[in-house]
Length: 83
Image (cartoon, rainbow, N blue to C red; front, top):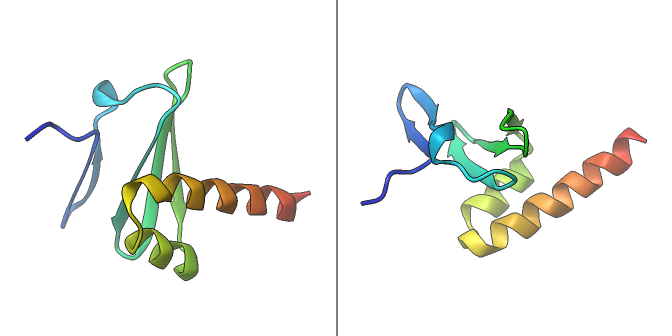
C-alpha cells in the first residue's frame, strides 16, 4: 500500500507535506467535515474545513474524480458570496 499524503484516524488528521504535489488538492472526511489541504508553489500548506452538510454529503457519495469539480463549484460559489 502506498503512503497517503493525508491519513485519518480517531485522533485526527495527519498531513504529510513531503508526499504532496504542489498545486494539488488533497481531501479527507473527518467528523462530518471535509478537510481540504493544498500545498502551493511556494510550498506553503493551506488547510480548509468545509462543514456545509450538502457539500460533505456530495463528497462522501462521489467518486474521487468527481470531487474536484464539486469543490471547484463550491469555491466559486463562496467567492461570489464574499464580493
